[in-house]
Image (tube, rainbow, N blue to C red):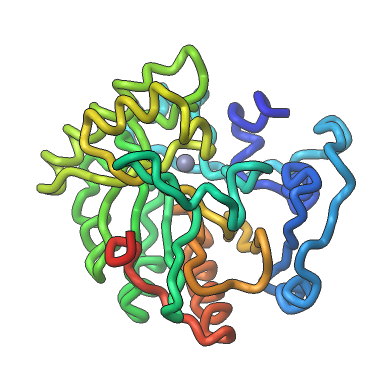
Length: 290
Ligand SMILES: [Zn+2]
């Protein structure tokens, strides 16, 4: 399952069933935009049957994601676009919100302020509708971008992050940083150099693709030597189909939400703002808290 999850276009959109499989007994609830969010919220910690096999699940083909240059197209087979999800041991309000020396790995933020954090990954689609929602609510967005998706689109991502957010590192070509065949130094450090040129500042946060290897010695080493001091995971996912995966519903102060630059991002952001509002929370800039 791990391999098919990381490769191939079928993984672009995860079915609820697959999301539950991936939850694998980790015990988080899944809701949807159409009304089950509330029922999910009412039953936190829904337990799932432990580790069913992937073959028991029919993957749902996702939409075709347009790629806008030949370079991206050439890399497409090795990329998995937007199907990161919570996996046991890497998410939830665990002891991961702690410091390893100067480099801190976190997937939520300890705060009593009534805030949550909006992070959006990859950057494949540059939706004007999503940008309009960000502008309407003035949402501080931390955009974890894959370098190949950024080229010639810096204006879009500067606009997306204009409300207190920032552009941060999500590697060059979305390699799994715990995979021995991945050039970890290049994935992290080349992105740092290129983003510094493109955006005028050097990123200081890294989101490893798939959430893989945040404490891997190579990841820690190359992050530190190239200017990263925060490795940021997440504890809520709004999927590309605008399903909500909670570690522990409902959304709470300090939660870090993961979305992707997909075709339904505008609706997902609207929904997320509403979910937060229902709990008395507003989006705030991660940059101000970590
Ligand atoms: Zn990603």
